[in-house]
Length: 107
Image 1: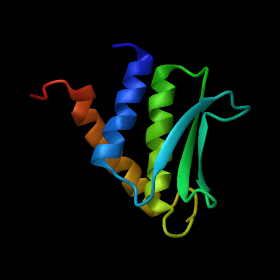
Image 2: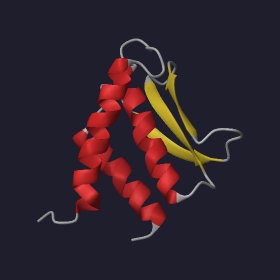
Image 3: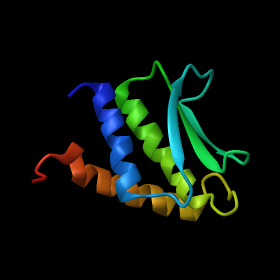
Image 4: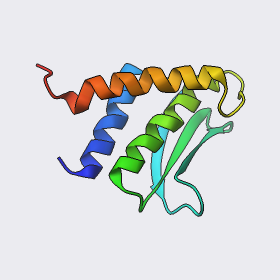
C-alpha cells in the first residue's frame, strides 16, 4: 500500500469510527509554515482539514489525526486549540488507529 493510499484509508476509517457532528473534508495543499490545519467553514457548515501536500505520508497521517481531534472537539463552539478535551480525543483516536493498523487482521 502506498503512502497516499494509507492516508486516504485512514481518512475513510476516521469518518466511520470517529464521525464528526458536521461533515469534515480534507484537502492536500502547499502550506507555508504548517503541516496542516482545521477550519470551521461557517458558510458551508463543515470542517476543512488541510494537509501539507509535500510532507511525508507519516507526517500526513499524524497531521490528519491531530486535526480530526480538533473537528471533534470544536463543535458546537470552537474551543481552545489544545485543551484537555482535545488531548483526550486525540489520544483516543491515536490509540484506536494504532490497534486498527490499516485494517490488518480485519476479516
